[in-house]
Structures are given as structure tokens and as C-alpha cells.
Length: 96
Length: 433
Ligand code: SF4
Ligand code: SF4
Image (tube, rainbow over all chains, first blue to last red; front, top):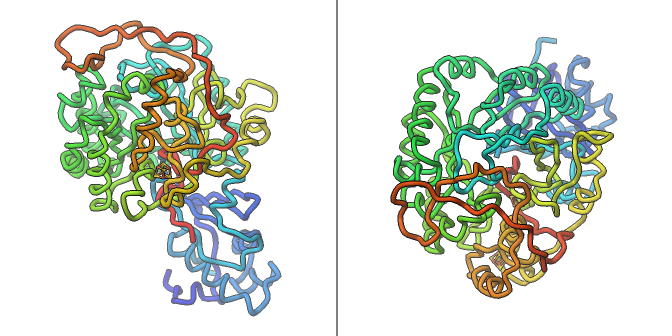
């Protein structure tokens, strides 16, 4: 979690879901459950879900967001949301 | 409660594509439950007087090992993250550990509730080694005297021994689950001290008039001034103590206790009973709340997604007589099951309404005597318990009457259950933003 700052995750780093996290799509977005911390998180929309799901294959958060079709103006909000997920270890940084 | 007495967080994200809060979306239900209780057996070595499922004897129609595994396969497919296993005493099923292993191997986490009878040092050791299993030990008194009064002779010693074994095995953070009663509310500090001593987490929940709890509710449920005491204690100790959102009806005393105001029944919560019947909530074992059976075609998924009852529970609700109350926003009229089994209308106040409206309604109800009885009594034929005449138990056994045929109800149909959070609600502690 070295690259976390108040704006959320660093857009030029590579991330992945924590291996103990399970993702379940729901009509409103998705539920995430971390078996290690026994915590539940909500993704409030499908776009964020798409970002989270493409993290593993994207070289950076920025690319994952672009792939999901997020406009530049909306980037900070997704960056922030990923930061929240990182704080609860739902997503983890990986060496790209 | 649940595993998720822990606080779920929603990352503040993203421009919401749909209007409204997440909570509002939950009212329409989810593709799979978040919080599923599965009572594996009605067999139990104890006969607690307040048992929510009237357990005691095994039901011969119980799901077989293979049928249980098929249910687990289905839960895996539906991505149900974990189940709360209870009973009865689930560990007395001879295939209990086999089923726990099967579930965790299939990515379905397990939290099971037990009276501790099978938690030997070896079992505790094994449990401590698994990330996917959590344990909840029931204790309803901080002293043997108070505990055994409701849970039966020797049950305090059994629970304490199990807790010691868990501690010795290094299993920290297991749960000690207490149903709050008139007799144990004076012991809240002592419960906290026991939890701290064993490295466990205290979990306080509400007594509901479900199962045999209906028979003793009048005698065991907290007095109004005790409700206040409990509320103040929770406000003071809120952080370290889990409540599974049981006590939202107390929020009318002051500031709201943390939680999500949503009755999860049939929306995010449900119960599978030992014979595979699916009910809207573990506290609502009655035909009115029976949605289907896992043995029927389409299995659990079909019941969860398409049953007529659950579909109805997922339509927007309003609070009837409570709507004009200034506390409605947090209290939402209390618990559907508590109202149902005390014979109160589902769209009126909770029997323990802190403004006293419940008591008034109960008085009226007593006059026409229309109280529904829970379905399915699996009690041992003799049950010890508090005396009906209010005098202390001397010695010997008290025989409870077998339940009669349910009396015809004069209730509002449950098409609009109260919107409230609950004990088994995993969203406990979640503050929507
Ligand atoms: S009147 Fe209804 S909403 Fe108000 S405190 Fe009583 S139960 Fe709750
Ligand atoms: S509020 Fe009552 S009926 Fe609704 S889910 Fe909770 S315990 Fe069940």
C-alpha cells in the first residue's frame, strides 16, 4: 500500500484483486467479500466493477479505467474508490 | 449476524448510474442472499427455554449428507460467500465436520453457532487453523445460575470449557453470543469481562418471541427500564461489541445505533431449515413466511429468486401506524417476526416499542387472544424451564404443553413488513452514504 495517497491509488501503478477476495455481480453493481478479513464491500456501479475486473490484466490503473470507458473528468472519482478498496485490502498492488 | 457484524464499506465512488442510496436498492433484493442461515438439524443436547426453532429431536426428514452437499454446490454457484450454520446443535450431526470441510473447499465460508458440547481441544486446534471457519458460542448468563436457568443444567460449564479450549488453541476473535433477557441485562459488564478474558468478541442480540421463545417471552423479555439500560450500555461500548443490528428499535431513545435500517427478510436474509424449507428469516418459522423447499425443482436458487413470497417482500414497504412517529426513520416500526409472534399487526409498532405503543397493543391483543404459534415443534417431550407462575425453579422438570393447532390469525397480511434491520443482517454497522 505504499502508493496510496489522499487521492486514492496511483494511476500509473498496477493492481489486482486480493487473492482471498470473491466478487459477485449484482443488479446495482457488485458485492466483494474478503475471506481473510471477513469484510464485505459494495461496488455501487457496473463501471467500477468493470475496472476492478480488468485490473489484473491491465498494466496500470489508468489503462484499466480507459478500457472501461471512463472519461478523464471522472477519473479522480474512480481513483478514490479504488483507494477505499485498497485500504480494506480488497485490491492489492502488484509489480507490473 | 453474522460474520458481517464487521462493518461493510462502500467505496465512495463513482457517479451513481441509478438514483438513490444503496440501501434503497437492497430493498428490491439481491441475486443471492448475503446472509443465509442454515439450520442443519433440530436435534440438540440441550432444551433452552427460548429456542427460536423449538429444537430438541431430530426430524426424520432431515436433508441427507448428499442433499446437503448439493445445497452447498448450489451456494457456490450462486456465490453465497458464507453461511451461518445453526440448529439445533449442528455439531451433533455425524457428518457435521464433513459438511464444514466440503463447504470451505467449495468457497463457502462457515460460521457456526454451538453450545460448545463438541468443542474439544482437538477440534479447537483444527478450527484455529482455518481462515474460512468462524465460531459462535452461545452463553445466556455470565454466571451458571443465570445461564442454566434458561439453557439448562451444566450448559454454562460446557460453554466455558469450549471457550477455554478455543483460547488454548489460539483461536482469537471467536464470538460469544448472548441473547439479552430480563435476567442477564444486569450482567452486561460481566459478559464483556468474560469476552476479554478469552480473547473473544461479545455479541448481544435481541430475544424474539420465535419458537419456544414465544412461550417465555412475557417472562424473559427485558423490562422497559432495562431496554434503556441496554441502550445506554451499547452507546458506551458500541465499538467493541457486536449486535448484528438487533436493537435498532431502541434508537428512539436518542441517537441511532449504527446500522442499516432494512428488514433483511427475503431480501438479503433467509433461512434454510433442516428439511430444506426456506423461510424469509430465521426468526420467522411459520407458514406465512415459508417460500419453498430446496428439494423442489430449481432448488434453492429458484426459491430465492422467484418465489412468490420473496418477490412480495421485495416490493417497497411503508410503516402503517408508525409512519407518523418521529423516530420512524431509524426504528421503522421494529421487527416483523417479533410483531407476528406476539399477534401484533405487521404495520404497527414493535411489541417493545420504546414509546410504549407496543405494550398498549399487547394489552388489546390479550383480550382477543389471537397469537400465532410458530410451526414445527421439535422439543423434547419434557422441557425444563422457568416456571409459568413466575416463582423460581425449585427442582425437577417442568413439562411444557405441546403446541396446539395454530389459531386463526387476525393479522395484517405480511405484504408490507416493517423496514428495519435485524440480528441476522450482515449489513449491521453499515452506515449508508
Ligand atoms: S411508534 Fe413505531 S416507529 Fe415509533 S418508536 Fe414505536 S415502534 Fe418505533
Ligand atoms: S427485522 Fe426481524 S423479521 Fe426482519 S430480518 Fe430482522 S429478525 Fe427477521
